[in-house]
Image 1 (cartoon, rainbow, N blue to C red):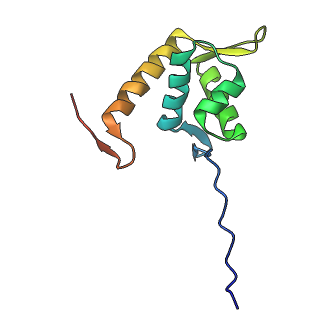
Image 2 (cartoon, helix red, strand yellow; image 1 turned 30 degrees about the vertical axis):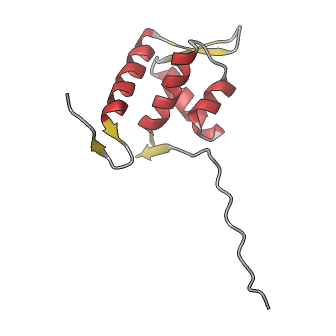
Length: 114
């Protein structure tokens, strides 16, 4: 008689990278870098495009977008239903991208300090 094998758990390529400290939203730098890269390719994006690049779940993406809008990093244009980074948003994306380039997030150690 053949043994019954358990069906492997299906893993989604999306992750829910939302951290909450005392109920406050704490964004994951890796997700912010993915969102930044999306805006570097195109300066305005629809929510589905941001979702694709962010690789998060829809509820998680909503938290990121709410946070980015509330803190003045993104602006939503109701006319063309797109998001645009503000000047402050571009600065955030540049800084987080530079930081990400210097840190190996898999090991949590700096690659190089200049």
